[in-house]
Length: 633
Image 1 (cartoon, rainbow, N blue to C red):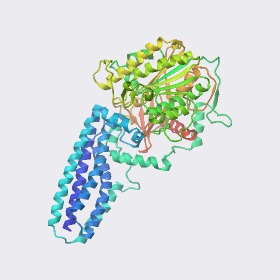
Image 2: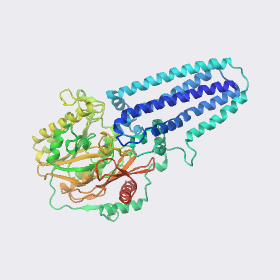
Image 3: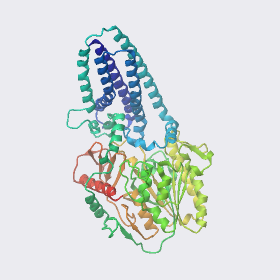
Image 4: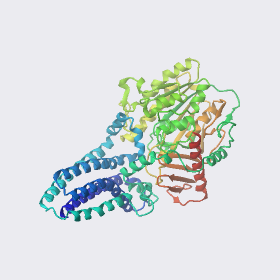
């Protein structure tokens, strides 16, 4: 009995020590995010209490095999030193991984506003680039150091506890074996209850962490290892391979009504023939997809730091859209929705997969109409399966890191923006000389960590996050100056938009608006200067440009021609969250937590509210579009 009790004290000490370390990392996360909570944030203590709750679930998973081993050892009377060494190795390895998740969650949460989840597996195919990103960003190194220190301290504690317990076991007489079994058996039951997490019908889920209207505090209590494990298992479940928001056919009918389409016989229910008036213009098209270009970075949208003078000037002299939203919060979402007119579905990457899907959209229509179609990227062509996907879906030529001189490679994401632009110009000149109009896309990278400021550029701001925006804006200005000297300039429509936004402060919403609110700038010397205030999204870019080019085609996607039609509402996603908004209301749905969030946006500030008719309308609009997209892919 006494030996079993000493073993129990060892296991309990390890368990408590792990909970203390995990709570400490949660405290660090809170300190990092505290400035973004806002004055109206709820009390933080419920988040920490829920954090211990979730941490205990993970700790019970780790503890269960050790308790079973302790029970067997007690039953057979085996209490020698190898038993303690085995426990130390088990706890050392498992808690190194658990602590890694919590330490990595600090910069991850600060960047994405989401707890660490299965979206990280998108990076597993790019070990070199991911390692370069993590190790190359100086601000993240302190968390790596913190992790190393905590693992070292925990390992030292395990060594000390193991030695002390081994000596105690040797001094205690071997009596009361079955009393020890009686002691440990209930502990196994208690551990199983800890894994379940609660007494209700369902075991603990992420929704248990939610207790207020503040998105940061609601997620603060979620253990990152729990989130990563559950989201990975959820992704693997057959029912989670596709959305089940509502009936497929009902969703399609709703979208037909929203778009005013009836479909064509034997074709897509969204198919419609587009027959513009007049002859095709034959203009070239250049689309610049700018990395993490949140509207909040621009002076037009209230940024006081004068980071984007060139983009602000372009915005003022173009057809511009003030209420434009990205379909998702990853580059693959932006490419997919901008060019093929389909919504992005949560964190799904439509471009990856050994079987490459085929879509119709802006690149395929322009290719079929005789355009040269080119895609310029800074990084490797294999990233996110871009080479295979883009070539399969309308792009004839791909230019990537493999094409650029080695000395021009700035980091693991390839060349700098200004080199990408200068590299593309002579190629576009040759395309013009060939007699074919061209459609070119340039995908930038600079505003993505690790931030590399080129030595020949001298920003006004020392802060890397501001300086890199200055650089990206400067590169656009230099590109437009150089393009203005080209013979094809006046015959070209230039489009500037973000692939997605980025986290810039906290607005209190379940997902910050800055993640998806991006500018859309369409420039041509013959276009009228106008700022449009109606809603629009990346899915509308293709139909709008094809309308401007006056090209006939059959449209089969979710976009509209923004020069002929208007949206009262827009919908979008950000990893595990889906959103819809109109002029006065914002509706957000979190499927993993099965929770609705409603916000009144008719006046400045953070105003959560309850479900009512306007939010039901947005919910129907959101669910219908995403479910119909699932059906029609």
